[in-house]
Length: 397
Ligand SMILES: *Cc1c(COP(=O)(O)O)cnc(C)c1O
Image (cartoon, rainbow, N blue to C red; front, side, top):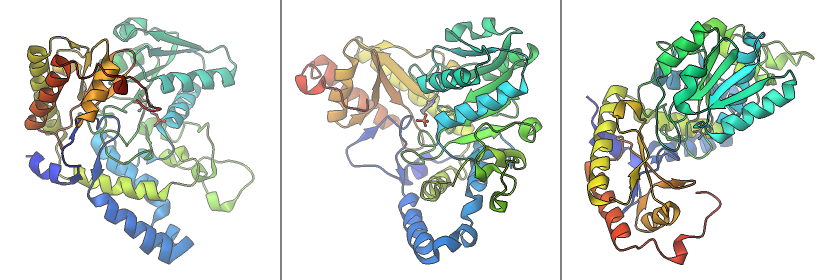
């Protein structure tokens, strides 16, 4: 049984803040500071370049990949860390397209995160082979899968509404039509049980600074199904993915299996922070996370709907069709969110009118939910949001 009172103690949360934005940037796990200081002083400082071998820096992308793999149902040796999620979208899609060379359609949906779509557009333009990016409404994806589709590129959980695709069913349908699949798990890894093996996904990618609490800009992960790992050609053929980086050959030979998805020198400080952050997950049961997250969401939805009728639920009401966030619409959503943040309830805003709240049982409990709704009711009933200080947009929303 996962004890959430204990996991909450593993985070350094500021006093007086109710943090409902762990779906955007997870909070700081207490173990990170110590680990970073050790890596900086005892490894980088004392051992200098020798640390690549002596402190096992070189194998960190694989070792940490295996830790992520345990959270997403991937076997040992099938996940590697590096770069950012946008880069991993490019890598996975490029390899998948080459594995299905006769077809020309990449199918995605309009709920996908824009960067995934932009990266696909950029890749397809570079390939110059008449590829077509087909963007359909999320509910139409299943019907749009046919034998023209080379790759289905989807994000399981919609970043705005929290709507969750039926991943195993769509994968089954795509495979039956001869398409390959790339799944973005940005809002799934650490949020709900994921089983890339059971669902039979071909490629999966995700970031680690959201529900996995790895810190701002922490490295992304990529999973390649073992059946393709020695076959997928890496489009970003950097030296760290070479079979023998330190042979300094003049031509590229891909490394064995998932190693080939490495690109350049790994960000050791960021990996060290992530490694420490992942300690939080030791002994945590993803099924317990899911149950607790759905309980928090039910409570939050019931409270908001009964006490703030101005807010309209933007997330699916059926918990099984939702990730670990709840969103509401309000015409002045941006100002409402700024007023909430000013009062210590941190969520975020997504254009045009979405108030987004991440519900993360590792460190959020029912008292926090009630406390957050109390503040929300105050902000709405007294129109506290209707003030010039809350309408100016910052660089990051
Ligand atoms: C958060 C997120 C990203 C962000 O990509 P970065 O390269 O890490 O900035 C991309 N795709 C999805 C689906 C996301 O949720």
